[in-house]
Length: 315
Length: 292
Image (cartoon, rainbow over all chains, first blue to last red; front, side, top):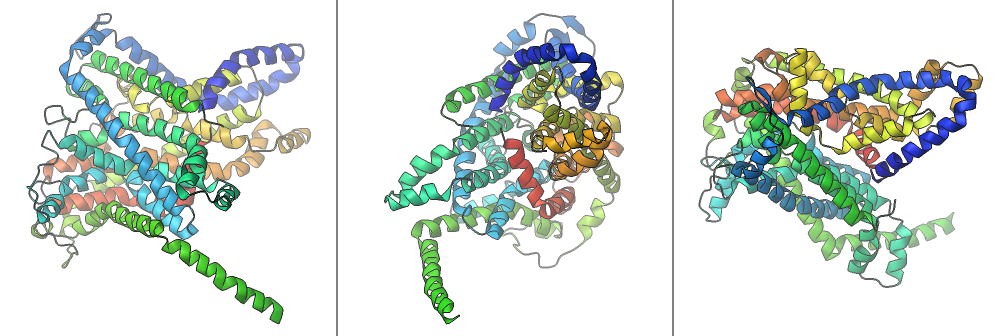
């Protein structure tokens, strides 16, 4: 992914040189170009129709008061309204909490699992990789159906278990104090599968000789981890941080299925807000503005994370 | 002969002892123990779905819970099949398989030429595709919905299948993998007078097989689990996919946990089966897609 910006920058200049070089022999190469373009055409057609056009149209719609009955240009009014919208603020805060809590836990947990299993036998590795990837392959509907039951205030087993140690029963998904954390817990279980696979692969790629040499020099396990393993995991860390952050920002299905953003917007996220505006309130202009803001935020975060973590990463 | 056996007996116990010692290291024991506890926490919801599906309502809601189903019943499944689950299952398979085939076709041709051919605009096109991939798919769902509404594709198979084909992840994956194809083979084919299409079908496709397998399984999974798109594109009960259908059943059977567990089991069964059968391809797809 780091390559992209490079490739993009190089794109223009390289294209200019290749087309310059090829100009005298244009006729000879044209036939091959045509077949290349034909091979590309289907992908590009689908891409422009279902990705590029909606993206641009979304930006356009965000300047309109657009609902079932209205289509009226209002400039930046949607954005100004969002700026003053308390519910929107709440969903931004919730999303930030989700990211700040979930991403570090996902990373720490995945590294822990990776470190514990990467030297074990192939069987052990695929067994645990498989177990922790299960919630990610399972339909989110199945996941929420069972968690809804586990969290149930009257006959859920979580309250039964906490009751055994003397805690008061809690309405996990209905109490404004616990609802967001209850969602975060599920989100974490559905997010660790992919990072664990990546960490096991990355740890397996660290040359054994590095670690053996350090052991000969009587380096402690902690030193081996901080001085050898951690720096060599940096590219994976970066990638995992970016994908987990983006996934967390997109957290929608869990919320729509479990709490519908409630109680009191305490579990509404930015993505859920987009859905609610468009499909509950029928306010497509406002929903598009929220979508544009979300895209800008995610773009900024990706760039920021590459700038901060990318400097000492070798590819 | 006797020499080698003495060496073997000398080396083996030593190694074994070392290995045993590393296993008995307190850090190893604690982390293994923790790992097993976490694994149980992760597996438990699936166990609960599976056992819950065979419990009658009174048993399902009793406390303390019945950890093992003592008298399994099929009542929940009978109730479940009073809903159009067969149609939902068909819809899910039809949509996911169509997406899978289309994405594999479109991505392999595009990825191949982006990796192996020189033509004006190649780098720009690839740059745009990858930049779009960095954005989350869901931010375009609202304008995508209005587009599908204009086309009259809401609540149709077209609307459920085609938009996902535009997503460039597959092109990216196939481009990465196509770069490993040796250029000499392609040139040899060209010298032998092999047409582009024939080269692609007889030489490139067989070489891309491992990546195509990973992409196919991945696409199938994303499509099967793409709850958000299915939610906004589907309107009638007949057009629902299996997960969506089960989700809407929650309204009717909110407190009937046995039936909901049977539904949850059914909605995740195909994906779990595929995952267990093709775990290697999953792992490969994830690591391939992460190659920067």
